[in-house]
Length: 448
Image (cartoon, rainbow, N blue to C red; front, side, top):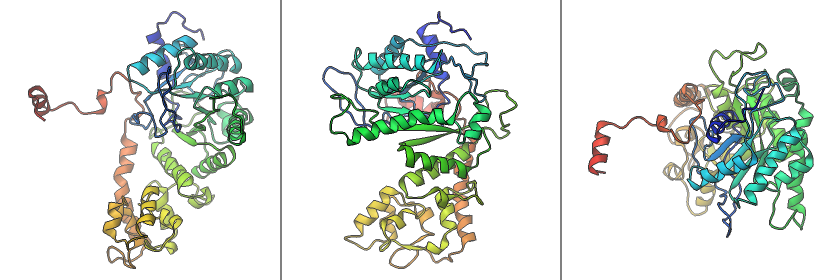
């Protein structure tokens, strides 16, 4: 594997941005930092540009690998050592140039930097540190930066990078140690968890210490995240959400990302995918993850060892409600916040609005609709003033048939989307249909 050193910066960008497309663990910033005099850029806690590719991947960041060279031979990875692909690497100065030039043109608002392993974890992590040090110091870049911590790298380098980055992530890759051993034998679970623990402790220490690391510096202020591949190994949904629950509890992660397995290598150890990447399964895992993070659900409530997979026809919240019909219907004007939050069709914001509004009035179904409640789902599980919206029998089979009908189109959209095409910052016309003749005429003559 020889690195192509004579490539232009544009050619390197084409190779290393394409090589980064299967890493999904980038999202809105989660950090709020205002602009500073003498520096360029800021970071907004509500997110960056909120521009996403068709598969949900955020494209408001310059998303690149430092290098696609790698010393490992992970069976599932396009950049594995044994693959015959063009290899190249940026220099720290080239990463800075790209970030600043894209930012000045308003293409991006931040940087997502991951990497293969060039020579060794220490050597690669040090190159990444040099790039961030120049961005923050020499180029005075104050925008959002998300960096991958490389397992096996010197903890001192990881700490230095953590003082320059907003968010760091360490990819768990596969949910169990056995899965990792079968498809990535050069990696180990303990080696992956070590930098994750270091980052968690650094963030925790900063919260409790009166004196920060250095004046004006914070250690990974937007927290850390990780990614698991879905469908490359035989783990079921229950095992995956149990792992995610443990990571949230023990490592204070901000987010666990799930990436549907794409068979990019012809390898007998990899599963066949006659139906393509398991996108619906990935979608259900994200829905369940949301329920655990914001709705107070535990993994054991959503699935069990006897029922280890999510229902393909129903979202996890509706599926849970139908399995616990003894808890419904819920009287909206009396139920507490946690109970209301478990009603299908009611989210965090609408639940808070309900609690606030009923202090001064008795709510009805019309009021709930104005608050953002999705009555198409909620109507089967709630009462207002002791009455349901329609006269119906609380029959599990009937309610299931109604909810499945509504969910069917969403499931088809997920399974039929062409979402693994890498989006280009310069050519996104494929996302929209071509203009009609009427559109052309109105544009030419200035009619609105």
